[in-house]
Amino acid sequence: MSSEITFNDSKYKVRPRTLVGTSEVPGMIKFLVINRIVKNESQAKAVILGVVVLLISISAYLINTSVAVQPAIPSPSIITDN
Image (cartoon, rainbow, N blue to C red; front, side, top):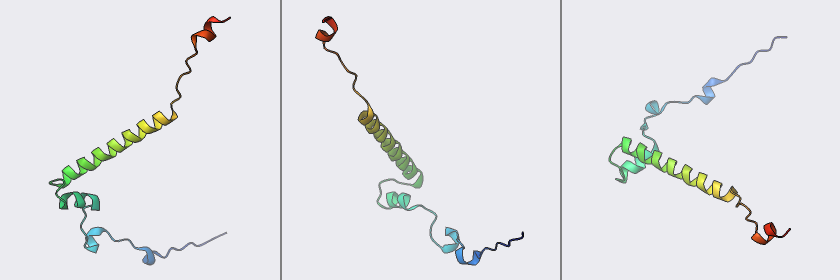
């Protein structure tokens, strides 16, 4: 049983950004630098990382508080009435 599989690679070629002529700077970093929020790319990366850490910690806090169950506090009358 011999089956031949062929791929048509010419239809789906991906060219790197340098060959296409666009810059290799990601859009979010470029946005931060152009709008003068940060001075250079390394500061932009630090800001983006800080925002990601902040958002993850806020998400973890919100998930923890929405799932947490308050402990039941029995009234003293239930405990002493036997």
